[in-house]
Image 1: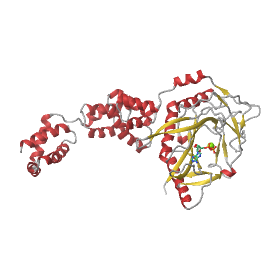
Image 2: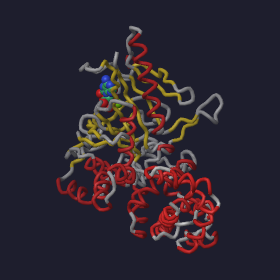
Image 3: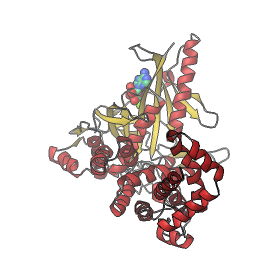
Image 4: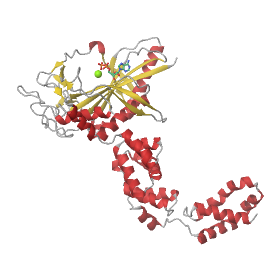
Length: 483
Ligand code: ADP
Ligand code: MG
């Protein structure tokens, strides 16, 4: 039986406003517990919420970037439930009239393909506080610093068909919000959180299967793993003749399994109703159009420009525009060395591998864009071979200075002096009677391959510094003269 996985994501993005959605308290991360919760966040009687315009601007910018409809009139509602970290007894959110309506976004897959994922809507809401269990024995701590922080909840249609597509979609959301500068997108600090709705059905079946919802997955890697393992669980149950229960499940990364949190039957009735403390928010066309004009260049447009302006492949352009820092780094390297293809190769190759190994971002790269440009310039003008360049690259990363400093200090300059190379070629030929003999006797078509031995010896003699094109040319002339 062939199964198809169906996924819809609900992504919460924390907006990087200075103050909260309905109060003037700071949203800064990492402050001592309860030092950034004011009377409004604590739901003191007599306080009233005041909407933060910046949060609206950010939500609208997001909607525009997703080619979505922007609602001219949006309404806040109260979602009522009890939880210790929610002193108001309700979350202020949007339900019937969210600020951002239907839209769509293109995602790029690793095999080079792409597809569109539809956005159902995105709404503005406030975050709750945090319950702390770890440092308390027999009780819980409550930190309300996060209470009232503005979020957008981004709800997709169930358009994704594999864990890889879900990750590609999430990466796209991440890249859009960070390009727009409306969120820091830091998953480890909870600025971007994802719930994955997963169901399976037989290929060809139209009707959607019963779904489960995986809560609060906090890394791209875990999204992929959680969806895979949950889909496998569902398929196993269905193949054994069982049925899927609609429920909320939790992904346990240590055990790589999902387990039941609560079933939908006992789900809360939230008794949503429009918040009487807040007026509907009405936007003018001019307000929206002004924001549209101010949008920065977004990843897809940047990728297209990288293809046309720098002649990059679609794949390279996509890799380099996934986050704004990489794109900026690339453009700085290009500007200062004028070699886009080499720049792209070094950034997506050697540099990406290094950053991966060290688990750091390009913003923390041990080699600056200017330093990499300096290295590429020396490859281009034949001062060093690309093999030696790897050695220089590592030395720069170790903090030994610029490419020029290291080439000078270590004497790595490529030997392009005809006399010196001829001498090395002569020496190697003189010391390789047997190989020369073989070369002479070999069929003409086999000879180019047989030159490899000599080139290797000469390279070794020159410690990798002889110009390879020149070795090849001089060697061939000298060997052919012996025929
Ligand atoms: P709820 O109101 O319970 O949150 P929604 O209908 O709003 O449910 O859907 C929430 C998310 O679940 C959306 O992203 C949607 O695409 C996704 N979804 C809905 N049905 C399915 C399904 N059968 N399989 C996978 N995802 C689904
Ligand atoms: Mg939901």
